[in-house]
Image (tube, rainbow, N blue to C red):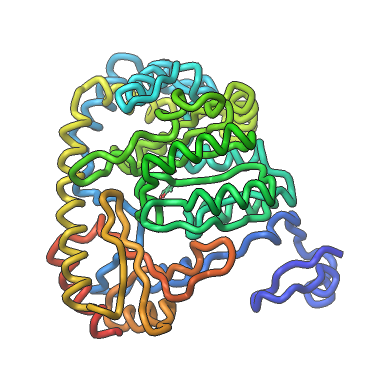
Length: 416
Ligand SMILES: Cc1ncc(COP(=O)(O)O)c(C=O)c1O
């Protein structure tokens, strides 16, 4: 009988549970054995405390949404073209949006025809479709250590055996990655090369080229997840793996790219996209058809219209300036308030600081004391697919204003 996880995390058989609950107890899919509710969710329950300053979430600042531009766009699509946008639509996506995303990607240096991409319900769905189309139980998948928690959970749901590749401030360490690929022959490698979540790290140009060479040489699918690339402070990051792939023979055939409007326009629209080699794209489209048929035409058309307004750059400049200032203040406060107790590399974009406590301090215990002082962050351990580093933590600077950031880091000092 298949084991299931009890509340204490110990395996028990369905038969044993049946003794207590009767044999009619609901029996869930065995794939759920591979995932557990994240410890982070437990922490989030505490965030409702009045007066708490939260650096925990990964939410963009709603005050920076271009609500006016989105309203104009939604009004326009409903006034001009209500039939098709309120009707069922194509699984691949709303055609004007596919064209808009193609132009958006071209402006970022990546030539992609509208037929070379599908629109997804957030990039989260693109990751799920990649899991669904590529991962069979027991398949090896390499992820950065640390990486995006939802990807860990999603790939585990499909039975992936995850392997962590080491990273530093310049992103994944390519020599180690190459060794891991040669040793494990993974089904795919998942990377967040630009302003990673949670790491804040950005893969250097040289390493990007190496990753593409390795993908082509070993014929290993590399998935580039890029929701944060536009959120840079000062100079733009290196071009995406996708943009660089034309210069590395054979690499484009082994590259999938996930993009999203969530961090640059609004996550509530739930509009993302996936660019992939034709065979993978076709299978992902088939799986999407069985799943949600298509992403909301209303939000797709709204996003498509928004792209024609010419407001994106102005709105993004405001977001970049605000986040850059918040990151600067957070770095300053962390240095002045926490000093040697914490080390970090200040990010050059994105939404996160990734930090490490000194002297063997445990970030989970620190998080509990911090909540008592009414400030929250996320301990880093759950972001590791294997071998968690218990001294790490993630702080988001996107949602709190600079005064709250200063106040919150002051509270962190009291919690040390
Ligand atoms: C690295 C990464 N990938 C994907 C997503 C999912 O974004 P969405 O589904 O809103 O496009 C997020 C959201 O936080 C993220 O941090």
